[in-house]
Length: 41
Length: 130
View 1 (cartoon, one colour):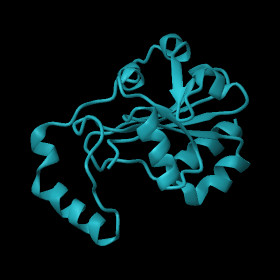
View 2 (cartoon, chains in turn yellow, cyan):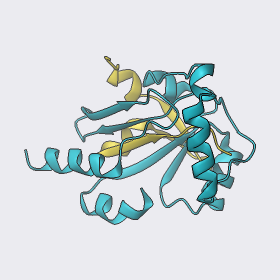
View 3 (spheres, one colour):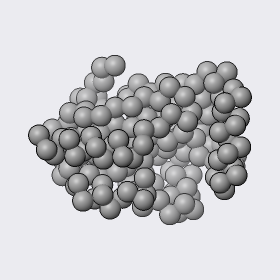
C-alpha cells in the first residue's frame, strides 16, 4: 500500500495540550513510532 | 508499550499516539491512563486517512471471537467505557526514519490486530544496524 509521505509530512496536527505541530517535526531528531489507537472508552 | 518505553528511548525513537478523540478527550485519556507518550488528537480522521487505515466490518466487530477477546480483556480490568470516536476505525502502527522513509507499517485487519512492541523494537534495531 503506497503512502504519500509528502502529504503525511506536511500534515498539521493538534496535540493533547492544544499546540499545533507539523508531523514531520516528530522524525527530525530520531525515528518516529506512530501508533494509531482505536476509539477511547 | 509503556513497559518498553525505556528501550524505545534508548534507541532514540519517539513514540507518538494518535487518537480519535478531540483535544479534551485526548487530554483526559492521557491523564487518566498516565500515558507517557505524546498524543495527537485526530477527531476528523485526517491522519487515519493519510495512512490509509481501514474500517472494520460490522461482522468483525461483533464476531464470537471478538466477544471472547472483549470478555478476557474485561476480566483483566481493561474495561470498556462509552466509546469515543468511530468504533469501526481500525488501528495501525508506522515507523518513520529521520529521512522520512517508512521502515515499518502495520494496517490492522481487525480490532485486536496489533504488532507486538518487540516487533517494533526489532525494526528499529534493524535500521540502526544498517
